[in-house]
Image 1 (cartoon, one colour):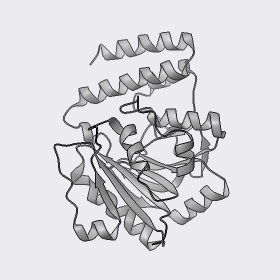
Image 2 (cartoon, helix red, strand yellow; image 1 turned 180 degrees about the horizontal axis):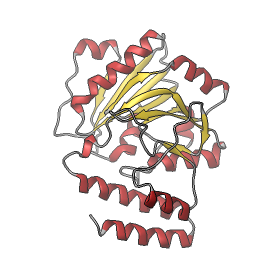
Image 3 (cartoon, one colour; image 1 turned 60 degrees about the vertical axis):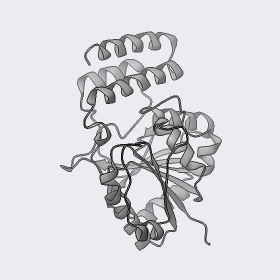
Length: 269
């Protein structure tokens, strides 16, 4: 059996109804371009079943797993899946994404020619506008807070060419498997959110700054589907991880200010 080029990893939580569209849209394109790939689905939601046609599971080399320790969060589930991956490259995909356009072979050639460590792709919302917070630099604390406070929606530019950046979102994060394991995978102390920024920062510190945002590949991302019925839980997870990230990576004074900021944000939940 030929080795797979890509291992596509999806963590499901309250999104089973969207999975087949996600898988079919990207698989169709990968098949058209002649790639060998597999899908690894980790079901973090024990309350819902993932029902995918057996013929499609076989066609797309699709496997579904439950983590033996239950719902360990996004990072923990991704790490579990990566250990089962047979592909040379890992592609983490959110279940509520759908491939729309772009030449994957061109993006892969760019990845190889530039010796890229991590790459992320363009995400648009259902109305077609670019999604906020899909890439960025490691801004200092005060500017980050200012920008977040002014642009509550998470303003982001929409470049037309590949862009060297600090971090990309884990919703469509592409990485060499060797790099992923060299870094120890995602930090499982982040249950949800900020594990992608943390991973990109650690990659920059160890491997050098070589994280790229590649806008020529576009996905539609519905976003937030896992917490559609519980927005407060989503915000709690977000602020928990934000505070953990600040304690891990920011200076002493920044940590103090960040703790106050998170406290004030939590008080509004």
